[in-house]
Length: 193
Image 1: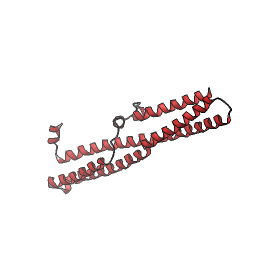
Image 2: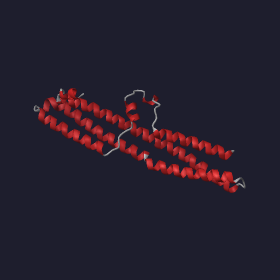
Image 3: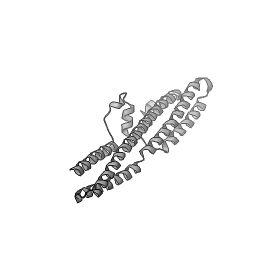
Image 4: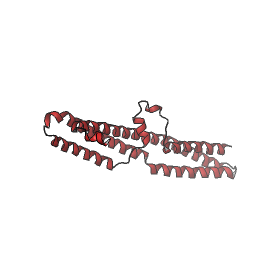
């Protein structure tokens, strides 16, 4: 790998870096889409969790039924509050927006590199000047990445697969989501029984 780098011309290095930035940008796009999707799904789940919690509390208060139903509705209400607290700490929507902004910055740098590549043969007779302009763009790229979290491996896998919607590999956030759906159903069933 290192020997491959040493034998590249500045033009080849610019073309290589364009591909690298495109991969990173695609990963950021996938991360943003994934996090927006989680945020939207959680909003729907929380709507139903809150509706069910209210129904459980109201029916347990007005029914002269068992203390078991009151206990289940209380535990479910606490579970709903704690789950919403955990969800809010994950900041899916905010993180998705940051990935989106990062992707836009990367697109700008890709365009700068492409412009530099096109002008390289015509405008820069001295390779040193070309290397300085390239270095300035790469420094902006590094500064762009420093301010953001990295994408997950799942985003890279999806970027490299043309049928990304068919990939069923999920991350920990997905399993947290599924566990909460199952818990919602379990509490509802126990309350009804």
